Image (cartoon, rainbow, N blue to C red):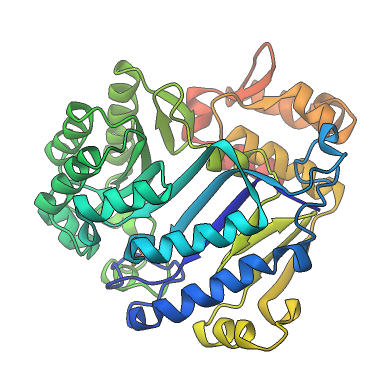
Length: 401
Ligand code: SF4
């Protein structure tokens, strides 16, 4: 088993945003030092739990060329997600990366991403992160409009968000991604335009674009009665989405995945790994993993996680809960669904290399139907969504469930 990417979950936040249902604990920040200890222990147990370093030509994206295992897995991407990883101190971050380096080899150009909440950073902190090895910053900006940020319940305001971008640049980051959210009640076109023009003015090379989804159990779900469409016109939302996509394209961005646009060379390596359905290590409370055709999750309460890692001999079963073992048929469908999210789409050769059969033999009927409906088009390498297909992607995905 083995993988070339690692996800590290930091499940702490200053306060819960009104729309958020990610696993994060707003009132437990004091437990961060104890959590970092547990996390490092988990990472260092990876060879025992996962056979890290025994890379095999298993399903899940490790290709046959790597069947002869390296002494240690070489990671090309490490991703700190949350939660709010920017709550870590520089020394905590260094400690975690130190554990990663004990167990894995980092490739020379390893992408090390850290998600940062604008309300938790300044230039000095960011400089420390950069010196510790972080070379890609994902900023949860969402909007540069105070009323939108208040609606979302973010801890930062417009001024803090603008300053965070400037601080990131002053700290020496070039590879910066900004999250931008659409479909928010009360969000004006002017607010979207000014957010986007600041990103462009500051030469931000990557933008992740999301539409607000009301998740059950969140304050926003209750506030909007579970039905956002009553408050945001879908036509307007789509028009704004197209405006952002077109403006970014005109400015040299590639729409390389449904929700992600980047200048050439700034695509998120970590996310591309997810969309290729490759194996990845995951560490931390609540983190989901995909390893050797098995999908599963970590203990989801802080107490459960900390107790499991505090044991004299931590047990894999106390930390991980396998959820699904993917059959080859499941994997083929998942490959299609994930590949269709990307601008390149499904590459025939990649499908054949993974599954030993032509994509047309596996999904000829589905592809023909999607082409007939104008959702998918044939390319030199395979098949990809059309403009219409990007808008109606769920219709295509439903063919592979
Ligand atoms: S900062 Fe991110 S993870 Fe934390 S509550 Fe807000 S949206 Fe959720």
